[in-house]
Amino acid sequence: MRILIVDPNLERARLIEQALSEAGDDSMQIAAEPGHLLDLLRQTDPDAVIVALDEPDTATIAQLRTASAERPRPVVMFVRRSDSAALQAAVSAGVSSYVVDGLQAGRVKPILDVAVARFREAERLRHELDTARASLAERKLIDRAKGILMQAKSLSEDDAYALLRSKAMDEQKKLAEIAQSIITAAALLK
Image 1 (cartoon, rainbow, N blue to C red):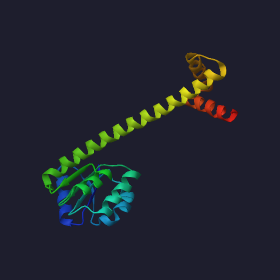
Image 2 (tube, one colour):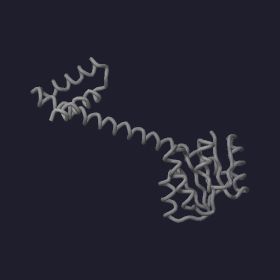
Image 3 (spheres, one colour):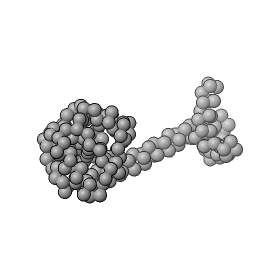
Image 4 (cartoon, rainbow, N blue to C red):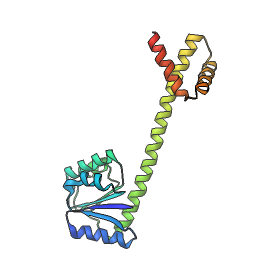
């Protein structure tokens, strides 16, 4: 796993690097300036990011938000001082683990592992939600098309569905595509 460590305190960054290296991770890059975090993320495309700061700043959080929208990835943020507003902003920007005053070499790898696991679970849930939304949208299209066919051809609901299904199989298209065609044609004929 490629890990980007962002920390203006080079000594602290080396501590994180050493802790991860001792735990078996060997593909790391250190960046001292969080001011160019977004550009660095685009250039290096790491699998995970560890950000260590004395205090979270709005510029870094904004860059993490933009980066998360472009390509989500696990992000661990270590800070020495924080407040609930900064924590909320960091989490909404895609930070997977937010640790206040808890940067110790022995904890770095387990915290990263938890962040990666939570990130993967969130991605799985996001994928399930997207699939469910798409399925619901297709179902709505099919129901509308069935309604149009039922009204136009005086069919039962089952017969309208069978007609849609038959047409989809004949044209080797998805049922939702045929439904959309019927809805579009009906709108043109009104």
